[in-house]
Every structure is written in C-alpha cells, then in structure tokens.
Length: 198
Image (cartoon, rainbow, N blue to C red; front, side, top):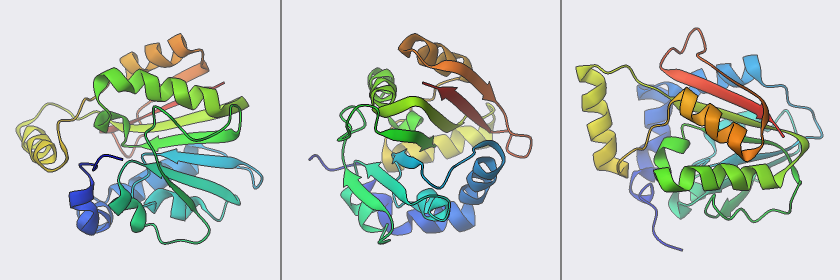
C-alpha cells in the first residue's frame, strides 16, 4: 500500500490534537451530545488515524474498527480493544450491511474531491439498515489566520478539499441516505455535523 501523507506527522499528531488545537475534546463533546451508541453496536471509524476518538468511545460498545491509510498513524493506536485496518475508504474490507454506525472526524477534507463520494458510497454499502453515518467536518471562516493555518496544513499533509454542508447534504441524498441533517454545534462554530440514516 502506498505511503500516506499522514505518516510523517504521526509522531506529534496526538499532542497537537489534544493540547494545541484541543480539537479532540470538542469532537468528543459533539459525540456525547448528538450520537446515541448502544452496547451491541458495531462501529467503524473511517480515517481514524491514531484512534483518539475511538479510544474514548470504546466504553460504549464492544466492537470498534479504526480504518486509515497511514500505517504509522495506526501503529499509535496501541489498544487491544480496538481493531485496526490499513485500508482505503474507497474499498472498505467489510461485508455489506455489517456496521451499525460509521463515523468520520475531520476526515473528508483530506480525501481528494473525486474520491469523497466514492468513500461515502462505500460507507453506505457497509452500513446496516437502519444504520447511521455521523460526520464532523471543518468549515473555517475566511480570515487571514485561517488562511495561514490551512496553508501550513496543506504543507504538512497535502492540499485539503473542503466540502460545504450543502454540498455534503446533496451527496448523501444522491447516494440514498435518508433523514440527512447538518448543523453547527453551538460551542464549536468552525465545525459542522452531518448525520443521516440508511
């Protein structure tokens, strides 16, 4: 499998997420407030990297798999409760209708624009009926500081292909998802959430 652009940031990724950006805590608050997880649910995190979010969710259910392209990011998961798989989101190594909840946390904008719909279609394939897709994405205001940050992020891990809530809603509906809703969490205005059912 090809080297992932996130391999080179794996050694400091958790530190940045937890202590500099504090993005990890905000995402967990969003999960706690907006997603119900049952003890028997089969969860799949796509683009889960070092498994920060999945590690926090593991007390809620017995089956969580973290999928990512970066082998070095997955090495950092180091949690016997979680299953890790190095795979491309366009070809998930799961049977049809085998997952209850699939989630993405700040992942879609790191997937090249032509592949974003393919990954979401593949997610639809593996979800049970009913099944939930839960997406946290960033949608920055256009300011000088944000432009500077995104240029730095582009330099580190490659150009991001941000997708607006409206664009994502249309794609999810085109794929066949039902009850699609997007919203901006009150305390995290630079993030938006998209939720839908299969």
